[in-house]
Length: 468
Image (cartoon, rainbow, N blue to C red; front, side, top):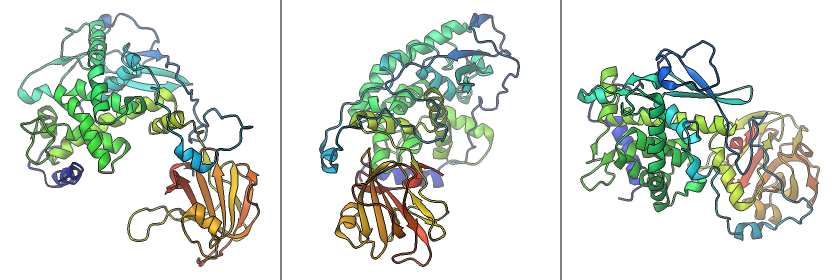
């Protein structure tokens, strides 16, 4: 069976399971947060009371493309290219080799200090740090667990260990918080070359996947080193099975715990060594399967790391980092789309099943203006039967009146069932400019706009790229 078949096996394990155990709730999740004012300077950690908190100001590193918080919640525009240069034909764009990716932050600085983004990620996943923005300034708050807490996983085999610092140091610092911080930094930095090499070995480019780097580092911190060595392989399998984003990372982290005697992923016969997590689940006394127990904890940690990335880079969705890396590699400009008309969405995008729907349907009154979702150039106008429309859309839209725009990043948007088209081929239009009127031409029973977004010549869900 191909590797991606393990995804379905994992799902079966999640449903059936072999043990009835409890829902995992991290011991750190329910810790109270201090409400007293916090100073911004760092005093000697070992002199602080375990009941006190401290917050520190974080100065994010300069990165190749600097973001500011987008007011609309959509991806802000990257620096634009020379507008006087002639547009590159679509076929040339498709053939242009991508530039090598550059890391957003040099790898050797990810874990440079206790306030570097890598240490913020591990500390947040452990439940020892809270990272947030206040009036545009990034702060990290040390939660009570940072100053000493009993490790819940070690209790599973009767070993009582007190953790300190951002990475829960297993008592190695002896309670000296400065030593705990330095231990955490040194441990993460020392493992970094191995983690980067493992990701590269399975085809995951570390330069273009900051989340993968931070998650493999956190998994190394949380569990046996063998699990962090298997995470890159599991992530590649998850992607082969169609999983993406946080779901893929959480699945891969969970799958990394299942190993057979040859240290290979084996969800049927492997031995799960997440004994600490399973012990926590049992003590909670709620019925979940073995897979679910581990997955819930891994998902919580993945989400905590995603939040750190979002706060650090001031963007609404850490998945947009991948979008940024693509832009850096291809030289494309980011495009923020808007809704093309005022109305009610009556049908959503679907690329599954026997009758996929490759856009969204927006019901609106006949004669309502259809607006350009982004600045672009008109490349096709007319009946859906015309060869030009079919060339750019890959389909026959019958008698529907259609407008097709091409945008500066190579995307195309399609507007169909129009009552009247207001633009001509070759015309440059600005975002929000009227290009047609809503109608019911073609095979529809009411006035509506059929709107599509094509990326790399394939339709994608436009609602993922526009502000509703």
